[in-house]
Length: 295
Image (cartoon, rainbow, N blue to C red; front, side):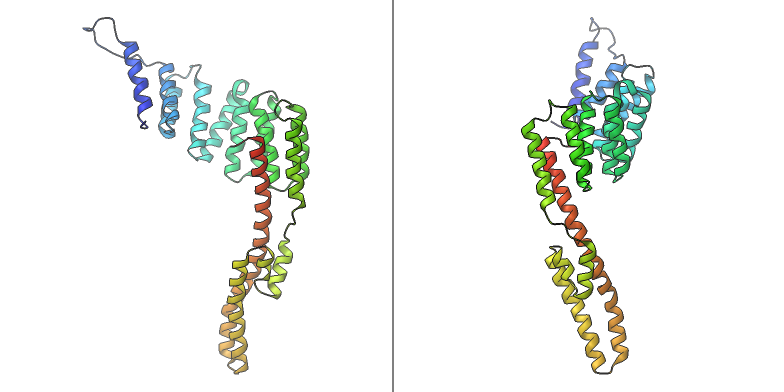
């Protein structure tokens, strides 16, 4: 099905419904807020998000008193989110939350948090998740916001918060997390905590003494071998120039080699941080898969 099929089907159906009883009369369609909303939904179904946004905005402009207004604005946020325009999504969801709190607050706050997370603004995301679950704890998206808090804490290695939030989630939503599932989740956390973390400081110190050794310590063996080879060549060339009393050449080669040496130290520290981050992201993914919660 092409991206135009669903909207065409909707319009064709409307033409049939709106046909006058006699064939001699002029045919026309009276545009209503229901029709305008249906057009937006049709483009959303086809994943043509920016055309959907246009149709929803038409509804807001043409029918400012429509009962579809809150839903249209929320759908605009979802369209921006699905289209990866997260800055615009944040603004749309915040507007929904502030204007139509009674019906859309928890859902809008959840997706506002998800948008912030995509932008790398984790503090703002955590605040939005808290808003979602505190406004109406019985709302389905409040439960999802609670799970988002768990996953966000896991990615940032805040294991104490992960454990605490999972315990609270089990108490608040016992129908969503069985005892065996809870045991499996905590087993994943135990496995994560048992894995050795890498010290960025130690990695940098090791590479300061022996270039490349810090990268090897952080399991980046190819990077370590490259750092060792490059820095080894510069060090050897500098020593050789000094032995030949060619101090000018030694100064030039050594000067060129200094940035590589310093970069080797920072690279080792970054490699250790990446190793730790890979472990925390794996925990997040494992928890997400086990909970069957994906965004």
